[in-house]
Length: 248
Image (cartoon, rainbow, N blue to C red; front, side, top):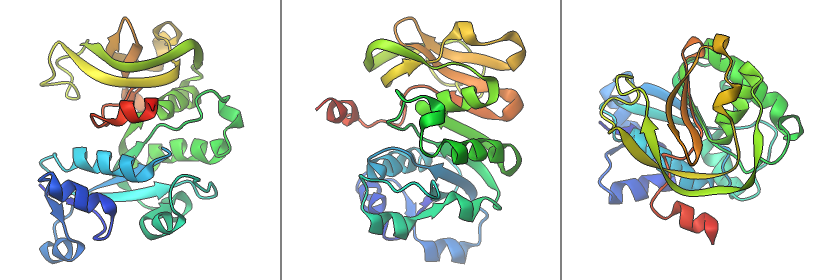
């Protein structure tokens, strides 16, 4: 089924070239089908690349998806043109009264900073709490996953001696889970981070369950059933070239 994104969003051209079905806004209005509403709080430096990667994956679902691009209210990105942000992104303060079927928060290049020193930490903490009342289920990626388990469970972020960087094989620990059904016993995922959350820090009463992990790169996917959240500590959304571009 098609994904509904703004007609002039750069991702539209990339996705159409790849054969992804992208719906025009006028067609969506005419069809009058209630789409699945997904919000994307994009904290990555290259927002255009990230929004394209996420839209590509959402466009492969069997449902009609409406993607809303969201930014932190007061934080001004330095790596994305301001006209792009103004044209396509809504501040979180403008959507906080709305409801979403799903909400995605990306990683961010701030993982070496203590959480409380991140400029937008206070607002992000509000976003985490907001997902519990305004979002059916949430998906946290990389640093956002670390931040969320710290916010809700007090779990520490551990600085590594060297960056975990590359494509690592992950073990599927929950093949019957609806989130991993259809995955093989192990699968490869791009990893790019200086920090980690450790299995030993998961307390018995948190309700967190480990769905996938690697001996080499640690935790990959956690499920927080009580909060309807999935925490992906790596980067399933990355393109083939993304790791190489980060390295160079």
